[in-house]
Image (cartoon, rainbow, N blue to C red; front, top):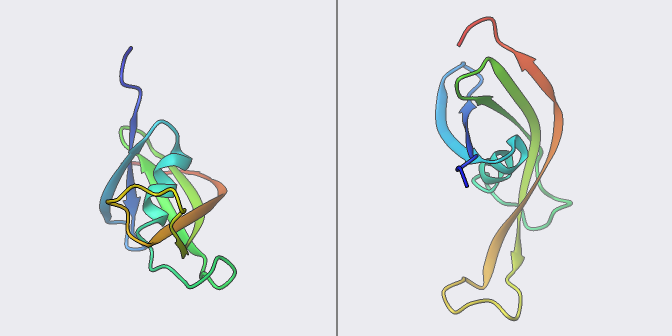
Length: 101
């Protein structure tokens, strides 16, 4: 089976692309990017941040609102997992098309 992962570049407000996240869907890559945000103490207290991900090789920019928070790890966690973990969520805001890459 072919590897159908796609690459998405995180775009800063200046237009620079700082990081690349891979995933089968834009949402999967956005969740990875959101987990890098500074986590809040709870989901309700988390600040919403705009995440703009350009699909590599295209002019499509997927726009998400992302937030992160810390939670206790589950009781059945593996030994290597820390006691506090970062959870994240995203909400799709739309798609833009760039004039050029």
